[in-house]
Length: 94
Image 1 (spheres, helix red, strand yellow):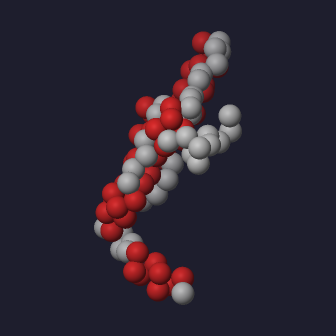
Image 2 (cartoon, rainbow, N blue to C red):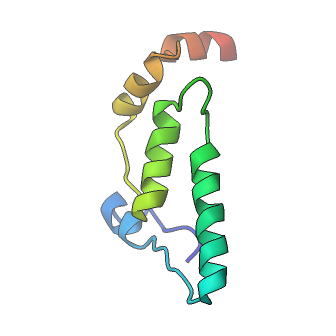
């Protein structure tokens, strides 16, 4: 399943359908892949001067192998420290 059907299922059921699996590899391939995985996660998202809340959440979900949904108000609160507001966004769009 590429994208879970959230219209006919609850969000919890849709998130439960999302899985990550690791294929078996040789020891050398594991080592190379693990290093690349760590490099990508260490540098993913907005990292300068520090990683923002959204990037922290996404990297955390990737490391945990679980997708966690967050309420819109919580996301807005995470972004407020970088100057995001619904009102400012609406004004710049309109």
